[in-house]
Image 1 (cartoon, rainbow, N blue to C red):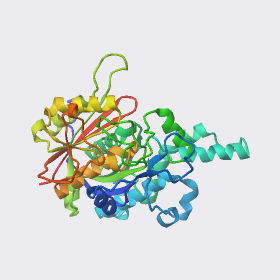
Image 2: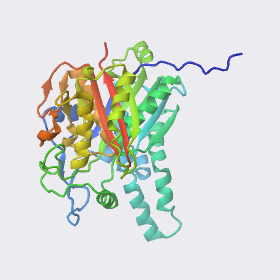
Image 3: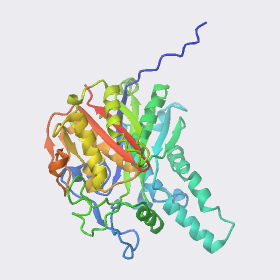
Image 4: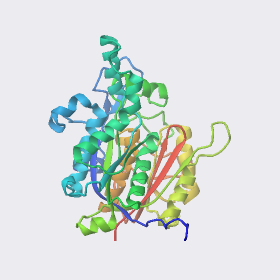
Length: 411
C-alpha cells in the first residue's frame, strides 16, 4: 500500500468580488474614480486632536457613518477597524453576487490580515480600567484576542463557517492573507473572503505610529509622502484597505460569476538580520512569485511598488526592481501616495487596484512625486492606458517581511 502523499490540488484562484474602504473613497466605485483622477485622501488628522503631535497628517476614510453602515447591536462590540472591515466584507460579497445563505454549511471561510488595528479597542479598555478598576479585562488580554474577534465578526455576520485565520505581517499581510486563502481553496473550500483592513486612528494608536518611526512630519499633504523622490522624508499613516472574494475558478464559472483576475503566483521571504550585510529579500520574493506564475520578467506589464517613503528602503526596492527588470524596464506605480500606508490594509488595497487595472487596462498614477534619476524607475505619474496581462504587487512589513503576488488577466 503506497504511503506517498497525495498530489497537490491545482486550483486556479480567481477574485470575483472587491470591497474597499479607503482614505480617498468609501466603496469600490468612489475609490477607483478617485484613484484614476489622482485625488488624494491625505489631510490633517480629523478623528482626534493631533495638534500636540509632531506628525499631523493621515489618510482617514471619509464619509463612514457607523450607525448607517453597521448594525447597532455590533457597535459596542467593535472599533473602527472592525467596522470598516465589515463594510468592505459586505461590499465584496455583494460585488461577487454571493448570498452566504446559498452556500454549503462550511463552504466559505475568512482569512484576513491585521497589524495596527486594535489600538482604539485597547484604548477603550484602558480608559475603562482606569475609571472602573480591575473588574475589566486587561488591555493585554484585549490585544491577544482582538484580531480573532475582528475576523469572527465577519464570519458570524455573513455565516462564513469554513476555515478562518488572521495573519500579522504588517504591510505584507494583505498579500499573505490572500495566499493563505488560496491554500484553503486548494484543500477544497470553494470560496474565501480575504485581504486586510486596518486602522489605528486614535491617540494611543498614533503614539504607536510615532514610536515606530518613519512618519513624515511635513504638514503639507502634497509633500509629506514622496516615495522614490530625492525629497523623501518618511510616510503618512492611513486606515482602510480591501477585502476580496477568492474562488475556485471552476466553482465561480459554475455559478456564472465574472472574475477580475487570477492569483497566478505568490512568494514570501524574510530580510537578513540587521547588520548582517545581507540584501533585502524583496527581489527573491518577486522572482519566486514569477516562477510560480510560470512567467519571465518580460511578461510583467506593471509593478505596484511597496513605496516606503524612506530613502534607504526606497533604494532597496528600486534595486530589487532593477535587478529583475533592468533600468526603466517595467512600468512602476504606487497609488498609495493618495492614501498613505495602511498597515495590513495597504497591500490588499494595492491588489484590488491591480485587479481593476487589469479590468480597465489602465495603470493608475503615483501622485505628488517623481522618481530620482538614480533609481532608474519608469514611475507612472498620470493614468496610462496600455495592454496589461500580468501585474506584480510588492509589499514589505516591519520586521523584515516581504511578499509578492502576480495577478493575471482572465482569458
